[in-house]
Amino acid sequence: MGTPAPNPAFSPTAYSPGYAPTGPPPPYQESFQLDANQDFNTHAPAGNFGFAGGFPSPMTSPAQISSMLQQPVVQDMAIQYGNQLAAQGKEAVQRELHKFVPVSRLRYYFAVDTRYVIRKLMLIVFPYTHKEWMVKYDQDTPVQPRYDINAPDLYIPSMGYVTYVLLAGFMLGLQHRFSPEQIGIQASSALAYIIFEMLLYLVTLYVTNTSTSLKTLDLLAYSGYKYTVMISSLLAGLLAGRTGYYCGLLYSSCALSYFLVKTLRLQLLSGSQGPEQPSYGFPNPPYAANPYSDAWDKPTPGGTKRRVYFLLFVAITQPLLCWWLTYHLVASPPGEGAGPAR
Amino acid sequence: MLTLWNLFEATLLCLNAVCVLHEERFMQKIGWGANTQTQGFEDQSSMKFQILNLVRSIRTVTKIPLIILNILTIMFKLLLG
Image (cartoon, rainbow over all chains, first blue to last red; front, side, top):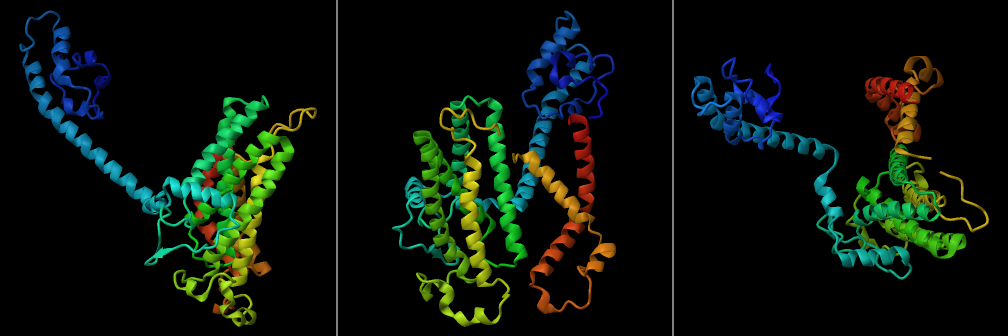
């Protein structure tokens, strides 16, 4: 900060030796450490007393008078400057963050309430009786998840991720394989799988030139629903051992695949104009509206066939990833020893 | 096991592999050149075009940061194993 004196902001008693011999160094330079707790107005008399070494009054030397004069004014200026700097810094950080993470879009995904969460969880576990899969729109923007059970949200995936990490720690503890580092390892492993899966989907969509109305955060939301499956199959494994785990995994994977196919089919195959398509009758495949166009031009840009394949790809990789992320956590039946450490 | 560090190493290696494919000495010999005049506009959507475009853009964007990242990773692995 340009001051040769030892840093006085951290020890009020060292503040005084810098003043007496060389005249008052400009104190505003030293108070650039934005520490508003350093209220020199209260410390200075004590310091000056300590320095003066028994002088009855601190107001004797002109150096001390000018330094005391400078303190309140300069401190206020310094605090104001510090606040200004902090505000500028916060603004700069927010600007940069907005470039990478669309915060307003994120807010849409977390606009949920308990009714929505309960109904959505029940839907993921048992989607076979749900009839109406279309996401409601409100003048071209999708309605908030609070009002529409079919809308994707990021609350369930993030809570599922945290629950999965804690449940993994719990199951490792039951098999005496737990250590506090395991929580970090499981958490970063699951996060790495999320990133890898998102990269895989995005690269697949880009390379096959499939144009969908599915945004990245939507894809993240739909791929996060598999944490529900993982948690339910792990709980089934807790209750009933390996067979319970596999039965639970099988049932919930079928349910999740059905759910994903039904939901994503409407979002992927409704073409680039999402809101206009539902009038064509969505229950049976909506691309049957003009069946001949796909037969003629085979590699259509953003073709329907590619979207169907992508949908199948997603529906198949989700259960596989569920299995891959959980099988090492389930206890093998007694008599086989602990599973291989992962 | 896939941890964040393993993922980072794997991406670093893959990016290195993509950047090593030299445009003149290799790609044009095979026919993957990105600046041929014969590419009409109807070719824009084929998968080969997309992949080659992706390779070229990755090469352009990540050439310099990759040097820095490689040096850092090598030093990190030398010091900490």
